[in-house]
Length: 175
Image (cartoon, rainbow, N blue to C red; front, top):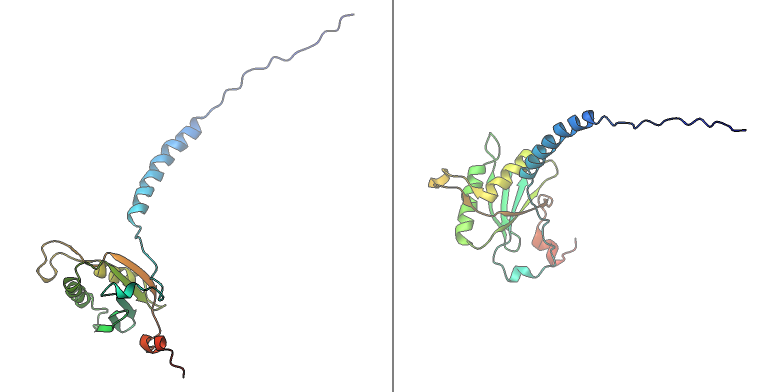
């Protein structure tokens, strides 16, 4: 009594990876090209230093540029307002801000830090143009032959309320 056992012959299955290879061939160059563009569009920004730091005694200028609806307020965090630059009929006066930044850089050549503070309704375009103006002076402005680096280390933050005086808040006056 012999029982015959039937065995099925297994055939080797071949994988068809041509569709996957086509996907990789298209996807890899696309990812590489977008990675390069996104890297070029990143600006490294820092948060403003805390008010309890004692670095103000060592440094002579803590530059702050406050973007208001009606213009720029350029000041020293410790010394107060340096200059107020009002708007033109067409918008913010970036050339006047650039001239002031160049004058401040001439007085403080070793200073590289600046803080840009903006009101909540400030547009992204205004923020970027202000940071570009503070960061460097363009060639052709005021007789410059090449772009000049002004204050490249920029911190960003929220502007204080208009009309609030910082020295009064620091002295601890109560209403």
